[in-house]
Every structure is written in C-alpha cells, then in structure tokens.
Image 1: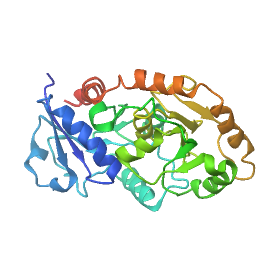
Image 2: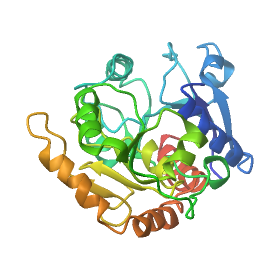
Image 3: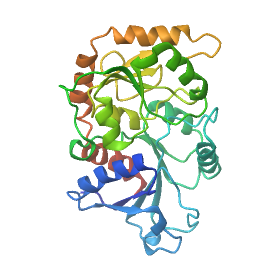
Image 4: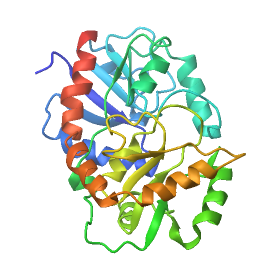
Length: 297
C-alpha cells in the first residue's frame, strides 16, 4: 500500500475523456487508496490541498488556481503527444500555452510517450511516462466476425494538416473511405466494419495521442498512422506506420496506405488487442502512476 492517497480529477468533457473516466471509475472501486473527482470541484481553498499525504492527478486540465502554499502533491496527466504548437487547434494551443506558462507549478508531469517525456523533461520539475490503459467492459472488444465494408475508416477533428489531407484522401479512396463522426462505443462499432483505422496527425510533432491506441484495440480494425512515437505499440507488430503526408507531394503517403491494405490486417489487429490490452487501467495506475508519484513523498 502506498503511503499516500491519490485522487484522479477528470475535466468532465469532451466525450472521449468521459469514456475513459468511466473506465477509471470502474477500476478504482477495487483500489481503496485511489478515488476520482471532477475539476469543477477543486477550488484553491479545498481542504485536501493542505493534506501532506494526498496526491491530486489532474487529467489533461489544470485548475485555474493552484495554491502556492500547499501540502498535497499536484500532478498533471498530459495526454497530448508532445508540446509542439504547429497546427494545433485554438483550444489545444491555449492549453499548451497554459501548461508551458505554469510548467513549474505541478510537482510532476505524467505523459504517455517517450517523445512527450523528452519534450517536457527540461521544462518541468519532474516527468514520467504512464500509459492510459484499457478496460474491456467500458471500452468494448473487437467484433472479429463483422463484415468489412470499407478499406479505411477515419475519425478526427478537421484541424491543422487534416484540412488539406482529408480532401486528398477522399479523392484517392472514394467509396473505400468511411468518415466517422460518431464517438465512443458507436464509433468503434463502425470501425469494426473497416479494415484499417487511419490516424492523421494534426501537426508535425514526433509523438502520438495515445487515446487512439486504446480506442483501436477495442475494434477489429488495424491502426495505421504516420511515423510517430506510439509507445507501447510496436510498429509492424501492433500497428502499421506509413510515410507522413506532404502537401506538395502526398504520393508516398497514399502509397503507404495502399501497401498497408495488402498486409495481414486482422492478424495485426489481433496481436494489438491481445498484447496491448494487457496494459489495463488497473495496471497503469498500480505499475506506472503510483510508482511515479511515490518519490514525491
């Protein structure tokens, strides 16, 4: 048992975050030293800020005010792949600017890839890597028998590079492409009818938003992404990586998609589900989050 109590504070939105919140809520029911809360319930005068045996993990959002004088440890769990601001949406840029401006306020940054760890290491007090984790009951499992009606499925906001990549992709693939606007379980149900789940990064950063990994392994679609740091997924085993899209010459990117479609996609999707689903939410908390926080006490 750790020498401290931990509460994980979720922001309450967007829907993809609340879905993971449900997975964490289910998991912490069996972890008496860990609890969940919501960001709007953390004013600077909340008593727990002055509890020396308390760790507060803020999921993707910091409160507007972090008390200067506090006894509790403050941790930010930052899910973006790194901190490079190129082509981020307005909201993402605002978050990044806030985190950079207040980077020395949290006692620890938890991030999800080694690329993010490298970016934040010189900017924060302390940084560690912790995967988000998987929960079959709340996230769903692949439907291996569902008929594949589309080669490529895509889901994501049309910001940054995606604004010019998606029209090129639509022209090249035509009816073989399924643009998915649904979210959460319904999104993954539709991805089961696609041979691949394509991730297109909105910026030129080297990391990867690892929400996608846990979303992908709950479907029978193989995850295909541009070359990025997608830890703990292994390229060629759990996911397929293709050349990045270039506006002036997208040929290599499009050829990479066609080459990926010739790969044993169901075998790759099965390996991804079998091996990456071992990184459960409970394991993430017990083996990554708690040990990273422990040196703060």
